Image (cartoon, rainbow, N blue to C red):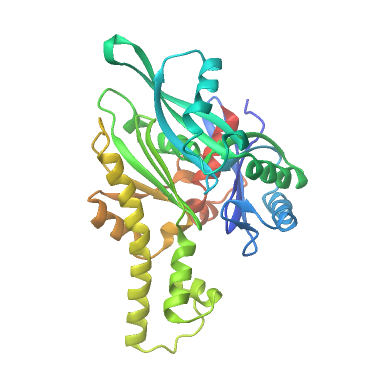
Amino acid sequence: MRSSGSLGLDLGTSAVRAVEISVGADGPRLERFAQIGLPPGAISAGAIREPKAVTAALKRLRAVGRFRSTRVAVGVANQRVVVRQVELPWMPAAELRAALVFQMQDVLPFPVEEAVLDYHPVEEFVGVGGSRMLRTLVVAAETAMVTALLAAVRAAGMRPEVVDLTTFAMLRVATLTEPSRTAGPDAVTEAVVDVGAACTNVLVHSSGVPRFVRILPRGGEDVTEYLAERLGIARNDAEARKRGVAQDSAGTPESEHFERQIQQAAIARLVAEICGSLDFYRGEPGARPLSRMVISGGGTLLGGLPEQLRVASGLPVVASRPMTAIPNGSGVSARAVERGDPFLAVPLGLALRMAA
């Protein structure tokens, strides 16, 4: 017997996306998914600027996706979320939560009293003198941002039951799609990079254990803005050129070559930040060698991004195909899965959290 639907919801800068799965004895099955574009500026820098527009998009998402469940896990990852790895003496969970307040109060761009704190234990280890220690990832999200996000979701008729870091959703998908790479003492360490419109999530994990997390305030929109500025064109035209769907084709070979150079220069700025984060990880004590990079998100459709990442990082770069890792329900076509695959790693990972 299969479980009732588990729904994962991702509210990005350019679109809202949701995936619904069911779970049976044979594992998860993809039942439905959908994505709906947002008006420019409706969500900006992680904050909901136009609540009515976001709620309207979510209502349309429900109608288009024909989701059966209203219980959702909502993902967050933006400039109003801070993730830090800390090492503390082992202590019970209740005491640990209190200790995290003191750990985070000096590193947040907002008062710790205005933050929602959570943590993800990474591993226990033996410290100096044989003391029992705990390494954990601490997540702090601005309370006002989370409150506004949940209000928009509830106004659309959904019931948010879990708020989860987008990076942890990526981690679930990474272990789902490559189970053979996540077992045994010689587990492979890989980088997982999700390139969104306004931010890029970087995760390093070994055997499903997170080693490094960073949220970069740069994504596909930065390429659009760079094109618009350097070419002196409207933002909508720059977006169309970036996606290769510009209507005019009157450019000369020289102008088209110049345009490609500008786009590759814009992508190079994003690549530099991603690889800078990986270099930071590599310089950490005890860092494990990286075997490859897995990329997902709408930004991965940018022409030249995978190749630039491969050259700059020195790693094999492969595209994540999360939606092909689980069987499809009768209402899901293979063509729809292929078209949606680059965008849906995060909502799938959130749906898996609801099903856990």
